[in-house]
Figure 1: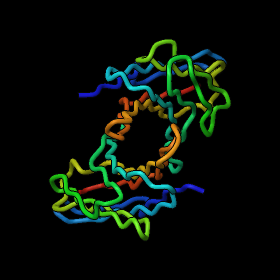
Figure 2: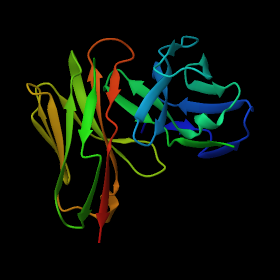
Figure 3: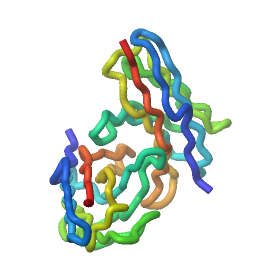
Amino acid sequence: DVKVTQSSRYLVKRTGEKVFLECVQDMDHENMFWYRQDPGLGLRLIYFSYDVKMKEKGDIPEGYSVSREKKERFSLILESASTNQTSMYLCASISTAVREAFFGQGTRLTVV
Amino acid sequence: KNQVEQSPQSLIILEGKNCTLQCNYTVSPFSNLRWYKQDTGRGPVSLTIMTFSENTKSNGRYTATLDADTKQSSLHITASQLSDSASYICVVREKTGANNLFFGTGTRLTVIP
């Protein structure tokens, strides 16, 4: 069974704090993605990576950065958290072979 | 522009009843279409995958259909159970590129006793 693990289920951070969201997958997938999910807007792509040390901006990269130092780990960084970054964050790992996206359990981030 | 639209946005049905969720897409070139179920506070989990040549696929009480000509898919849930309460998300994959997943905004299904 593929496993995608996000480091936290719930986080509460203060405005201006630097926030790290970690995602680890155990299936040696090349492609990893970070999405945020908001009511009525669905999943929106923040950043993705198709290889170690490679990253590409998604649809809403502003205010975020990412790091992929190892194939299994993809980190999302909020340099200075703001209240409009309160959201559900989902990490996905994609198998090219079976054409499926495997999602982590999500991190509910609240910025106060 | 590649888009995926789902309807209805939300749905409430009685336990034991059937329901059908719709997904229309404009993604091209088309690779496959997946329906995901997302329980509240959880990540999405795949229910079915439909490729270009497949019209119908079942997974227990879930049956997905695909009409690649009209670019429409439906997810039919039979004899609904309380545990079916969730968001159902349609995801269409484009054939080219690394960033090639397009998400619908989901249908929020609530099954009541």
